Amino acid sequence: MPSGDTRVALFVLMGAVIFVLLICVRPNIANLLLARGSGPRERVRSEKRVGVPTRVALFDNCLTESLVLSIRRWSFWGVLPGFLRDAKRWWR
Image (tube, rainbow, N blue to C red; front, side):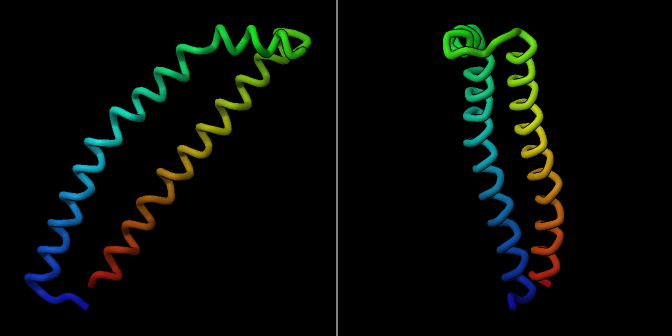
């Protein structure tokens, strides 16, 4: 169990690492979102070729995908604070 100065140094180091990771990850996420948003025309064309019968079915596919991604995103951001809280208790 770390004590006093070591604990503070570890928290500062952990904060610096998280900050650097946020700087590195944020542009990648933005690029992925842009790529996801820029390709629907081709996707719609390919799904029509494959045999999606109606626009309603196509809309249902897009809605389902968006809901699954948003639930996954919300569950991650819902779990992360609890994990950090438990990690903080562990370091005490």
